Image 1: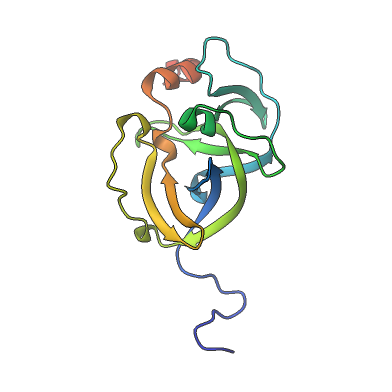
Image 2: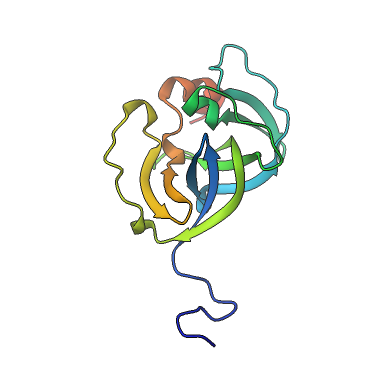
Length: 169
């Protein structure tokens, strides 16, 4: 066996991330937050919701709200292609609060990356309207930015999408 190469069956150190694209840039989600990656499917629309809220779909018997992350971030819907996926994630905006399911429409969500979390560094840019954009990693694909699921929705959208569930607490 060559020196410096991992032995077969051994994982490289680090955390696993699901990679996806928005525009020409790459982003990452911690796979610990990912419940399932599904083919893109049609959602039932939610009247009066922001345009980037794609609607709801039923996942394992439970209605789940879905957002188009490209539409939210860039103002244009995700391009529908074979690699565009509906990714179901665990959404928990408050550490003490309940975990909810949230669907994300993501372009080119078909690759993973393994990296130590500490290899991601602060971007130096603070944008209050996009708190979900976290630190960046210099990788073979260029810069990859970590998307923090807990920060995806502001209070007004969270109340709209989870109104009935919020009353159950």
